[in-house]
Amino acid sequence: MLKPQCNSHRFVISLNGVWEYAKSCPLPGKEFVPEGRLAVPASWNEQHNSLYHHKGRVWYQYRFSLPELPEGKRALLRFSGVLYRGEFYLNGQKLGEDNTGLMPVEYDVTELLSASGNLLIAGIDGDRYDSQAIGHGDFYEYGGIHRPVTLEIVNAVRITDLKAETSAAGSLKLRWQTTGGDKIRFTVNGQEFSFDAPAGAGEKTISGITPWSPENPKLYTLSAQLFEQNKVCDTFDLKTGFRTFEVSGRDLLLNGRKCRFDGFCRHEDFYIIGKGVNDALNVRDFELMKWCGANSFRTSHYPYCEEILELADELGFLVIDELPFSSLKKDQMADKELQKNAVIMVKRLIDRDFNHPSVVSWSLGNECQIEAPESEEFFRIVSNEVRSADPNRPTTLVAFTRPGEDHAYKFADIIGINRYYGWYAYPQWGTPGEPGDMKRAIELLNQELDKFSETMEKPFIITEFGADCISGHHSMFGQQFTEEFQAEFLKRYITCLKNRPDVAGMHIWHFADFSTNQLPLRVQGNRKGIFSRNREPKLAAFAVRQAWTDQKGLGLELLGDE
Image: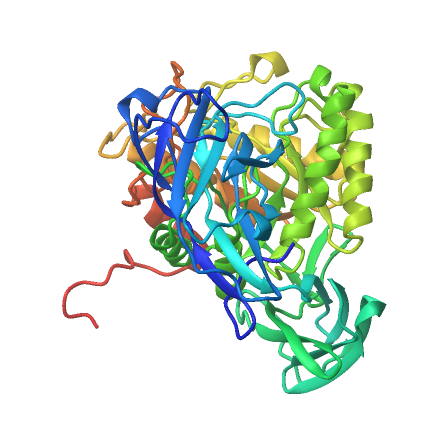
């Protein structure tokens, strides 16, 4: 499925805006009496007091008009992402249901459109259902239409899919699907070449390219033109980067050179909009990550919106794109229906994100119960499906399991390790150490990493480490929850990890504070961010910047500094 775009043969109508809503719809798909208004795209939870804790269904409706379509044109309705389940209707006719959540769905609605006006209705469930291949975690589980809703006007004969696999040497392997046509022509970096459209695949070496990297995220526009009897009937422009990412022993290689991941775990989370797409927020987040010296992030713990990955492509971030298999227990992983749904999720995620040069690894999951034997079958299924859909990108598996006690790390190329020594105590592991005792924390961390090195000949990344901090809380005595403690905690971890040649990277938990379900350990959310939820820096932000960039000072620009 291609992301909608405007060009000489395609036109996109946004259906974002203010929709009507109700918690019940007496006749599904038919107009209902609204209870109020909801902005789309956005979560519903913080838009209305009565919806914050609502986990049931919310019905949305939206009216729109458009002229009668010219002959030969088709209209494709796309919901780019909802949580957790969607049921869709246009003018009283059911279009379909989607049980994956997060992934785009598309319907050809040409025959259902009316020149006199149209009524679009969506019923969205705000909680996962049994056997849904979406895990859970310590983050607020928002409901709503979180990503854009569009109507794309296209030609009947068109390109329906395009995949580009590249290398730093300039190789370009293409796969495409069309609804017709006899020839397809591509242009990239001033070089033009054609194939028979029914072939569906072709290869070419592109000369004079600059490899994509965080230091120089060079993107090229691959333009595709579909012909039928010497007439152009569709075009599609795809931004791509030429790069090679691979695992060699314990090293991660980008374009043949050893690279290191310095970055963050993140969440799609902000005041009022919840998980809703917001371009200004995304731009600001990337600006702050760059300011810190980061070059990487993990899409913890689910696939992020396409707009975030597009910015990662443009700004040069290495992304571990995570499947939403978070904190699955052994009985869930043994559930045959969930396994089937997991395969569907893998196919749809890789189909959506395959073309992003920033996506260098697929994460198979996060903190699932991989010490249980049931995890072996589940992750074998997931791993096989990932490698079938994309044989070239390495895979990552993130877990909280101790070395030698898992049944699933063998399926991953890169090992992700989550550890919070110095913040949480782990009496179940027999590892004495008071929370806040950083000397003991670093000793325990080094001991455990030594064991991982002894037992695994794979690169490993410390994919989570961090400490909560309430902005504005200070202490001269190194107390937890203060800005001073969080800054010192992260400085000591970063120093330890930078000095270990067997560690391929680190992702701090977390980039910014975020909302969670209510727990005794959470003070209006998880406070491990080095930025507050409204993106103001804590003391730790300056400490991390200095550690990753070796730049002195606060890195601020004052009035008159331009």
